Amino acid sequence: MFIVFIRVIIIYITVLVFLRMMGKRQIGEMQPYEVVITLIIADLATLPMSDTNIPLLNGILPLAILVLIHYIITMLTRKSIALRRLMSGRPVIIISPNGIEYKALKDLNMNIDDLMEAIRQCNYYSLDQVLYAIVETNGKISIIPKSENAPATAQDVKVQNPPAQLPHIVVSDGKLIKKEFTTLNLTDEKLQKILKHINVSNLKQLIILSIDEKGKLSYQKKGGSLTLINDIYKEMKL
Image: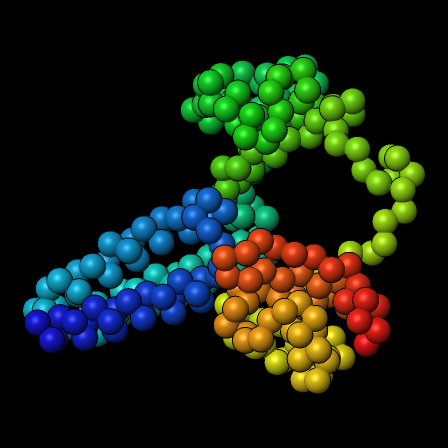
């Protein structure tokens, strides 16, 4: 029993490492060949876990070979457009200015119900709102709306928005992330003053606390709701 327990841990860690090496994309964002490799890895990994007669190395080696195959295919598809199209396919237009591209829909084995569900998931509810609908190589659908149905942008209404700032997480689940201090020009003393200002006596009270480079602070206490302060440095005169 103990041997099985150890084998499961080793295989689990091995599969986790291999999947991290393959990248961070979710299943819905994978290309077809990546989905196939992932499914085979999942199937192969269960064999040495349950069967102690299979040497552990014989269980890990096929996984390593699959990851190597994935790396080679990925490298080759970066260099060759023809191979990329062979392995991943190409985007397919299923709605154009002329309406539904019915042949393309049939080639993708989609029906009208599938199409309507897909455009509703993109927050469009009628075909006359859509200029183009494109099925991407990973199976997701991209929508280009007609101009009258496109969301208004700041440029459309002639509003000048300040450049977006990336928030830096200083406290995550009660733990301090000190590597962000340099970027934010933050010190322990400043942080203590900020914590006192928002009535936090212990970091473990916080789910998250983030600050961007303009001083915009957001935090949430356990059992509380997300709170925003537009410029913590100005408010506290830090």
